[in-house]
Image (cartoon, rainbow, N blue to C red):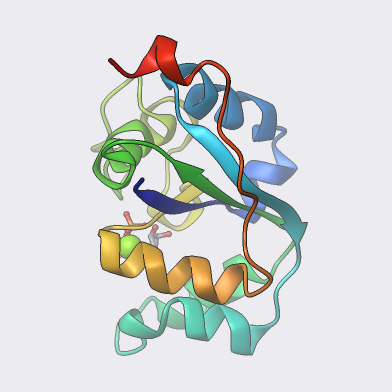
Length: 148
Ligand code: UDP
Ligand code: MG
């Protein structure tokens, strides 16, 4: 089953949005497979965002991610990468639709509360980076009430 990497950024943790965000993924029907509160260092944040290293906002982005603890998660379910991005909303919160996490809880692009993998392949890489210890293997007893 498909998995994605979701991270509640330091602003989301500071603003008390952890429960709300987890609730949205849970209520959708996705399964939580990994979860930890972790403060990462510069080198780790640079690795996570390596694809963006040439961007003018890269330094500020890394500063933002290391500024406090983040909640790193692995969520599993059919189409979870694409649907997870829809639940999160557009990168710039001014353009994120109301009802999405960024649309409901953020204003500035550099304080947009949450990260989600953009493709199955990047999800695989990000899960390996953030959860080298592996993730939980379990199946919800609600499975047959969510999938036909
Ligand atoms: N970002 C920024 N300024 C920009 C573009 C992006 O500060 O002009 C930050 C923003 O926090 C975003 C992150 O860099 O979430 C990663 O950018 P990406 O394009 O991968 O957006 P995402 O996949 O998070 O929607
Ligand atoms: Mg991205």
